[in-house]
Length: 129
Length: 469
Image (tube, rainbow over all chains, first blue to last red; front, side):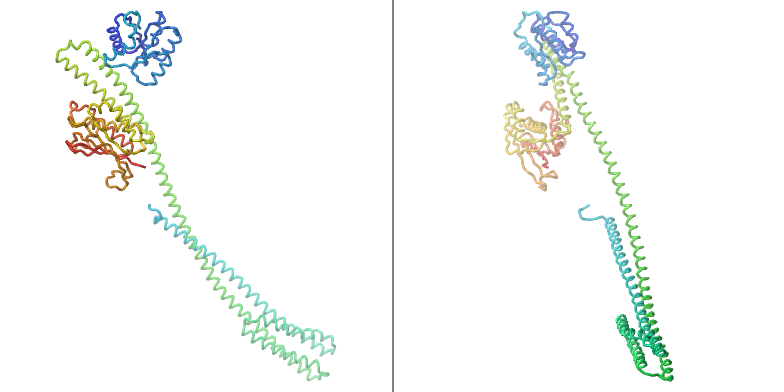
């Protein structure tokens, strides 16, 4: 989970814990921390939830760097942002993002969305960051 | 200043200038006349001279003839007669020439006759004396003495004629001098007058010019001030727009957190609340929701301020369709019926027009009578510039939104267009109280007017007046 906002991290964590308690979640506060963590702890995680507006290294820069360093990995990058701009959706897709979710305020709807995106994994797979 | 009418000052200027031109013209005319007078004077002098010359010629011819005869008489040499013979022929011609030259002077002509007579007498005496064969001393003496007197007379007469000519010339010259002086004086006066007028004209023009350049200077100063003020205003506008954008954006962030956390608590821990707790918690959530709406509305309101957007061809029928599509849920929920026909295509900002139509239709649906399906009709009519129903100073389109809703007391009709002003408690009818304020702002952006007529319990008619240029 790459996000500079502690609260947003909490939301997502809470939802994941309720839906998929076996998932291992790791947090990074910005793109730079995320890249360092991923590089130091191979293999890269199965899912990466990525915010776009972060200091030091933002979401776009992370995507570019990640694709360059780990082009062969199976990781699915899910952009998780406050922006609902179709432009951002398009650009991140171009940079290799798998999904794009706008940050929701309704907890129930968030869980629904996560079920849709991660549903096929169930509780069996170990890794999530 | 109305077309075709000059200011008093300009009239004076033109008059003075015209007078100056007229005077100059007179000046030229009189100068020319003076020139002519000068030529006439010269001619007179020449004439006088010629007359005197002719008189002298004639008398000289006679004198020479006289001398010639005398010589012959003394010597009896016929060669002495040659001058006489020649002159006798010349004298008539000379007299004729003299007559021609004296043609304009009757007195002189008379004298000329006398002169001719006298000369002819003398010539006859010459002829006689020459023919006589012998002349005795007495005859000779008589001839010479008489001859002397006659010649004297002729000389005197000739002198008189010359004098007369001189006198005539003098009097004519004198008269001419008088006239000349008059003309000169006149020319002088006119010259001075024209100078005065021109100077007057010059100073007036100078003053006008000074006034005009002063006016121009103050005009360009005002212009510069206006431009500066305009730039400042634009700057402030942009600042405000970006401030509002940033503010609403930043305000939304914590609000989102409130809503999200509230949502988690609601889902997971609601059962842990006391009854009171549940109620208060719900109130918090509702308040947060309301704040979200308010921020969105304020943001929308600020957006409508943005200047510099160009007007485009906007088909109001299409705008209505879009608005209806946006309000689909509301329409289905309340079973609203919206009719519209023949709405015009106008020059407007399409997004803003959509905002207006959406707001007005939404209101009409919201404030409908309980249990009665809202009926809204949208119509348009063309108003000419002097039509008494026309609230604008130009030709205009009038768009009416008529509904069968709850209506309101007309004493509040100004209040409802104010920002955040509502006529009902927010529990009964949801809303931010900004919708109509936004409509008003947008219509004003398009240099139009929005008004409303309403009757409580019957319905309302919202009217848009949009100018056509």
